[in-house]
Image (cartoon, rainbow, N blue to C red):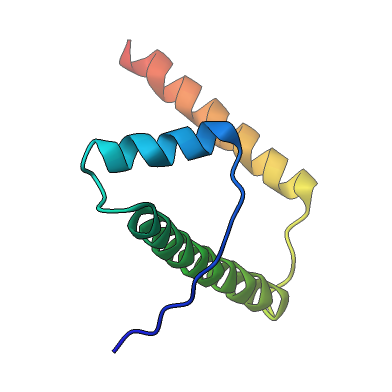
Length: 95
């Protein structure tokens, strides 16, 4: 059985009006139901963001532990310029 606890919160007028409007429209049975649903969605989003951060941290750790030599920004730039030149040349030949 779910355990409930009563809380009292103060909302900005705009949010309070939104809550009342959604309840009056029949989207939710009560203010409590709306707030509970909003908090559930927030909790899910928070967990999803945490998982995304963990994946990013793992990728960073993987990159830091990669034994291959680093590529300098100069080398990356040069490679991109070569790719661009090859693309321009290929398009020129296709025209």
